[in-house]
Length: 414
Ligand SMILES: Cc1ncc(COP(=O)(O)O)c(C=O)c1O
Image (cartoon, rainbow, N blue to C red; front, side, top):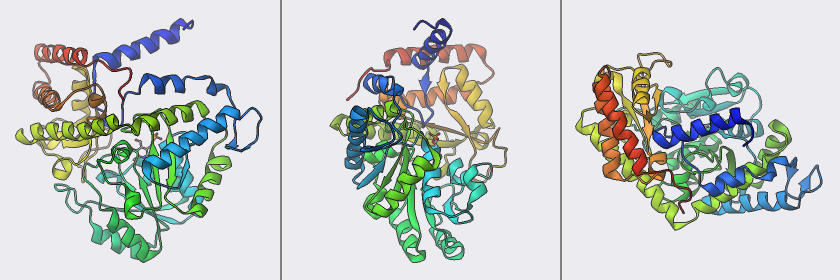
């Protein structure tokens, strides 16, 4: 790289990723092959439109690579239609709303403080200014069970056009069949935002909402799916819906697709089809369970009472008297990266909430197994309990660094 200033920053980030342990549950490391495709000459190409129907010439290879990505992702998730052009998860969700709703129409989604995502109706987002969002919640934050009776009651009362399942800070499984039943009762379309768990679904270690009759799945491609930063929209079988979604992405809300990213998505989907990816996904779950066990032994309150997926949401303020923000900062000092998070019925503010959210997708890519993850959880708690002890923190920092060294970020893994 001849731009020394940018080169220095890239090298700095490489070192940061290499030396620390990444526990943010929405992050991962891509393979060299995904990275290469993402940095390929496809970035030079304009290809507004869809394969075979573009507004520019020179589409011989772009058409092939986009078709390949579509074919692979449809096979992976067992659906008929896919749009692989969304630049990321937020535009994917916006495109679905714009495709299927009129301004003022209603979406029934998971409450943000109970695990939903900003794009599911936070008042500061554009969708919330155009559409009406109503929310369902957990019945009991200590078990994580969704209040399906209330969900049904709200569906009958508000007549949503879309019932939305999906989350970014929820650690239990959803009963997709119940969502579909309720949606049928009120004539709503079912949409699952699987951004966090797409890789686990692709690998078959978590249930695929399409198998229970969901109409649409949106997702990011850069979390458990271990692809480039991007989004996808999948439609199980309804061609009319799929066509509306295509129009909504282009020309609705996006211009030219990022074909380099689509090439990298195709590589990632190919990797996710391999048997080794299934092993990876199984290990993510085992590792999360190992961390859960350490927290339980240490009497740390977990929202949902534990985890069925890749993430844990812990009430560190309630359990240790440390705010989420302080926990995030002090863990950063020892080389553990995670994020503060609001918990259900939080008494604190979103910028300094009661919880921390962490997960195992990235450390599992590095090869950590259950006992290593248990050690990381123990070191996390030791750090939090000794937050003011500089010597102790420096000892822990060394231990984290040596773990990071023992488990280098691999170049290729399937
Ligand atoms: C459930 C869910 N949906 C959508 C998004 C938005 O994705 P992006 O940040 O790629 O726009 C996220 C990101 O964290 C998410 O967790």
